[in-house]
Image (cartoon, rainbow, N blue to C red; front, side, top):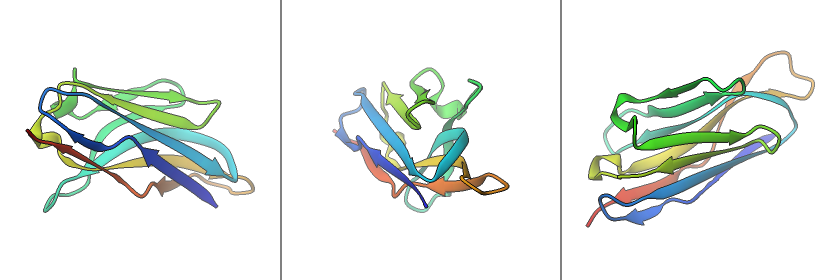
Length: 121
C-alpha cells in the first residue's frame, strides 16, 4: 500500500500565502513525478504543478510566478508554496505521485485525500 498525506490548507486572504505539504509512505521502491492538482466546485480536476525526480517542472499558466513546487526525493515529500493567492485559487488541492511499488513492474498513480484552500476576505 502507498499513502499520500497532505497538510497545510486553510483560509487565507487575497494576496496571502500558504504552504502545502505532501508525504508519501508505504511500500515505495521509487517515485517518478510528484505533483499537485486542484478541483473547484463544478470544475474538473486540473494540474497546478508537477515535478519529476530529475527536476523537470510544469506549472499551470494561471499559477506561474506565484506558486512553486519543491521535493525532497530522499524523504518522498513534496511541497507547494503559494504566494499572492487569489479567490480563484480556491479549491481542494490533491497531491499526486507516480509510484513504483516494491515488487511491481510499472508505475501507478496515487492520490492524497485532498486539502481545502479558501482564498477570501
